[in-house]
Amino acid sequence: MSAYKLLLLPGDGIGPEISAEAEKVIAFLGQAGVAKFEIERGLVGGAAYDAHKVAISEDDMKLAHAADAVLLAAVGGPKWDGVPYAVRPEAGLLRLRKDLALFANLRPAICYPALADASSLKRELVDGLDIMIVRELTGGVYFGEPKEIVTLENGEKRAVDTQVYTTHEIERIGRVAFELARKRGNKVTSSDKANVMRSGYLWREVITALHKREYADVQLEHMLADALGMQLVRWPKQFDVIVTDNLFGDMLSDEAAMLTGSLGMLPSASLGAADANGSRKAMYEPCHGSAPDIAGKGIANPIAMIGSLGMAMRYSFDNAKAADAIDAAIANVLAKGLRTIDIKGDAPSSISTAQMGDAIVAELKAVL
Ligand code: NAI
Ligand code: MG
Image 1 (spheres, rainbow, N blue to C red):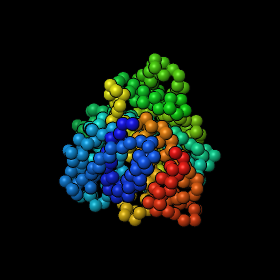
Image 2 (cartoon, helix red, strand yellow; image 1 turned 120 degrees about the vertical axis):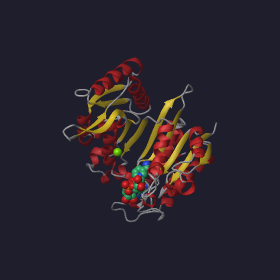
Image 3 (tube, helix red, strand yellow; image 1 turned 60 degrees about the vertical axis):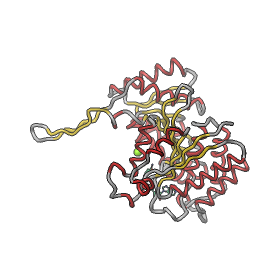
Image 4 (cartoon, rainbow, N blue to C red; image 1 turned 90 degrees about the horizontal axis):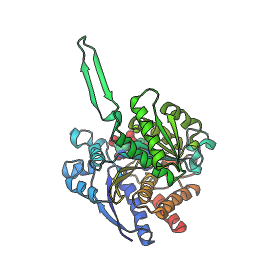
């Protein structure tokens, strides 16, 4: 078994606390002979600023490029509010995404049966929900040129953002979605505004052609983005993989996250282009931030972080056995009623970050 090269960036706030729990899982998978890791550790965000006055050092960027995957916890916090803009904590994240060219953002919305009552929707609508939203991350209206505010002759101002997509950009994100669907429910819903946007028209044309050419075995449907927003709250379980552009993906993935009712639970992945050997740069991180309000108290929920490690096992290391075991261990601890403070609901008591990590490792022992 060749070793997986993983760069661990704990970052700030609760980051180091939840990273420590992910490391317990990494150590256990190693002992159990399910995976072999070569772990490097680096600094990002406020932690990197405190040490080197940067948001991420050049040495750590080199480690990120050399790694098979980066596992990042969270950055930021009020301590660094006054630091210069170029080296603010978020700049570390943005640099990683940009330099590793991570164009595909994968955000699962998973609703564990044990937590279905925390959702904004009725239990029967979300119980067992498992959607994967694939958002294009490096193109579209957030980056298109021209992007400006100009003052007109009459003194009024005029603001412009430009939605731009090329065939290549649409095709490569479409490919990620179809490949994912083959490993899941075999269905892709592609979302655009083909009825009113030229970029949406091209989006639909390119996805349709790609499907016909290479992925005819996968079920494909197209849905206008506003309709999809409605369907997500009406009957979310109709979806498997949703693929969409940067702007719609930003909104729809946040909407889907709320269906699961639990910010401390949701992992994410950002993937780059595949090289000649089929391997790709990737970064895995929880959807939540550094939670400065509870940092240092040992009560943060490590599940989003451990789930992010699970996604790395599945999407970077092609180790479905380890990924399935992590998912099952998380579902099992929740089914047993173990809760950190953020998902406590009406449970009689909550457990610590470390207790949750230990409980997940104990479940891993049972399922592997
Ligand atoms: P946040 O996600 O850090 O926290 C929002 C609320 O959820 C807080 O009450 C927090 O205690 C709770 N929470 C979040 N994760 C939790 C967990 N694992 N367990 C238990 N409770 C959890 O978002 P917020 O407060 O808006 O931002 C705090 C800092 O994090 C800011 O500096 C922000 O810039 C940064 N941030 C970083 C992100 C990243 O590293 N990707 C993403 C979002 C925010
Ligand atoms: Mg957003």
